Length: 94
Image (tube, rainbow, N blue to C red; front, side, top):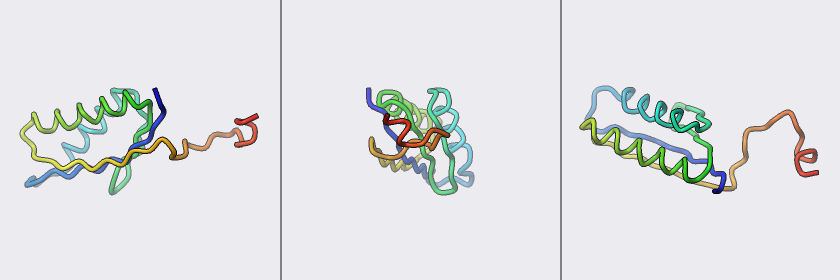
């Protein structure tokens, strides 16, 4: 397993309300134990690759099952920085 980050943008189509699909996605990400940082245009999720991909697959399936047409745009990287902790980078690599 590899630690990855994914930037996820979810665009519900032909819907008067966008929030239910996006809130459902956030709930699924959290149910999978991912680190979730919600933004105004996208959400960043972090975790191991198997968990991230499973959560993305479940999110798309859940929204589609609820009858919502949706576009999901995902950018995935194993090189994105992790959240900064109180430990400096030199201490982490020592």
